Image 1 (spheres, rainbow, N blue to C red):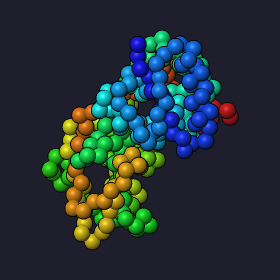
Image 2: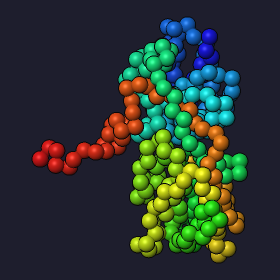
Image 3: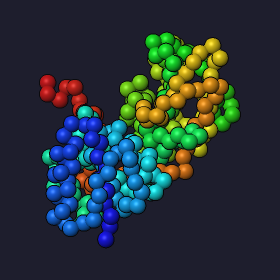
Image 4: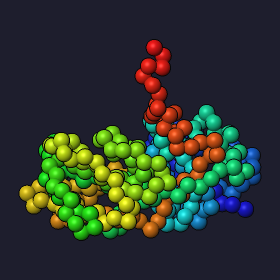
Length: 264
């Protein structure tokens, strides 16, 4: 018998209520489950339901990537781009999961030292109101120098997050590539670039500035001299319902692909 976990973010309104609804559905199938807090995750499960927003899913995905455990997001946040279900279709979603009518999509992650990111690493100045100067190397070759508010190094999963908002390209999740997007660069020549996932990306600090780095916008640390990012050996394992695909999610969550003249 499979062991299921319900990873709940109790800091989000209605999370306990939705978790109770999920428990009620799982009880109908007489499965083995346990409710755990997103801030105290545990190993040893075959499948994990995640109750929360995209931030909750990112945090859970990073933890369970080392165990190759599939996770399934049930949205309680604003956008819920990484979620596959909500309160409105919970009953049907649980039935599909229990009956095995889902696929597992392996999502590439980035790593720097002990830090993992499913979406992105973001480098900014310690003082957010001030632009910073830094250099970029790829595979030990100098690429360019930036004067900008920061830079985003993202996975294909993260290409629809902060990177997209900063003008970066959207990548489909099964492409193994890395997007490098400057944030508000003070020049017209600094454009986003896409490089191979096998690239070694190095961001070199200018001693005149102080920097901070965030992994998925959650773990924050400082940059001293240089910051190296590589593709991680671990993957996030996202469970996807079979009637959902990347382009349908783009349309439903971001209104992508709709003509502005459609209703004129």
